[in-house]
Length: 113
Length: 112
Image (cartoon, rainbow over all chains, first blue to last red; front, side, top):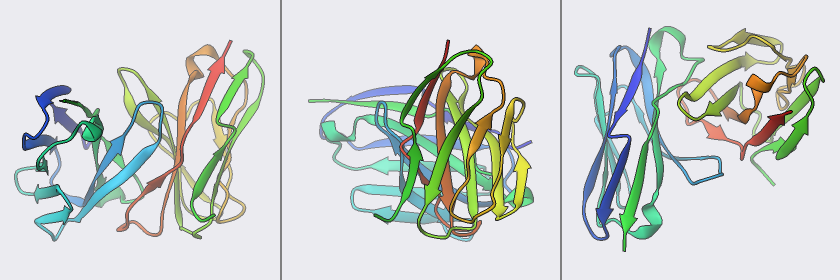
């Protein structure tokens, strides 16, 4: 059974720092991996999608990497800003059942001005 | 407007009542999903659908019913609401299994 883990559960850093959020999954047979952002009381906003054949994706100050063999993905945020404060979720689509999306529990990020 | 919309945004209902949460997407995406989000449990899949008239159970389907007679709509019905079904419900869609999934804004349901 595929399980997705995100550590740490919460992170607080001063503004301007570069930071890395981690996501690990137990079964490397995935179709793709997606990173989302969720603001309090809001829905999920898609940030980046990495297909299983890809190693990384970039969007602005965000860079997501994927290492399928080790079951890991990282989301790198450059030059963090207070507006980046949110919960970040990673989710995988297993090869065995790509109709499903399985989420990690998220990392709650706080950027201190 | 294009996108995925959920209604209502907020709902309070009594134990034992039937309630339906609506989800509508304008992209004609094949895949649609229902999740519930609870503190301590994260996002858990209730039901999903790969196409119209094709639905399947997720991780926590008990007490819920879905239908998908049209590609764009995927309603979720709580047949007899219980307090344990108090949660925030999210609907999502994706064009096919390799594409990005997009989420609605959620429905906050309280069962009293």
